[in-house]
Amino acid sequence: MSIASSRDVLEALEKLENLRDPQHLPRRAFQRFLVRGEAHLLPMDKPHIRNNPSSNAIEVKLRDISRGGLGFVSTQKIEPGSTWRIVFFHEGFAAGEQAGIIRYSREIQSGLYLSGAAFIISNGILSMLGVDLAHVDDADDTNFNIPNDFTDHNN
Image 1 (cartoon, one colour):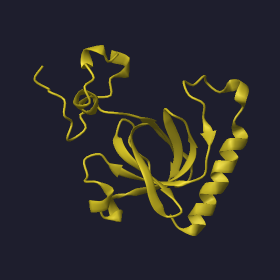
Image 2 (tube, rainbow, N blue to C red):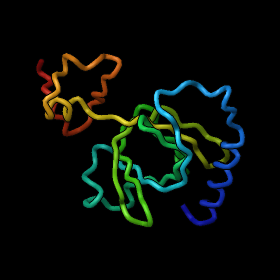
Image 3 (tube, rainbow, N blue to C red):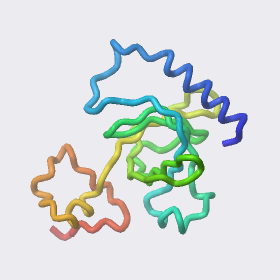
Image 4 (spheres, rainbow, N blue to C red):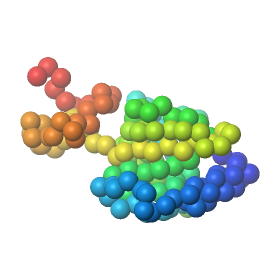
């Protein structure tokens, strides 16, 4: 995103925040925090960011975040249900990353999209860490066929 479009994004975010009515917000499992920051989305089927050319990344501007997910604005519509590695930046450096699944993406003004992602952990990682998948609630099932999943799919 260029500096001009960054300004447009910040203005769009400000308008969205002014439209929030706390009395009509749905109840959420985790408290949301308004944030302004940058992140890159990398498809889950690509190598780690250090091995990835930046052309594969989608730059996003963060809107809000909680322990369960985040909201952001981008110049691209992102397919709901798609899984991404979300790389958070602080002062120009990658500061951390988290896997996420896109829950919604809608155009808020010409060329700007508001999207929301839920944080996920694959069943393969849970299994690798010793979690008995029989105890994972079906509603909590996050096995989205993520490449390099360690789950034994033969059972």
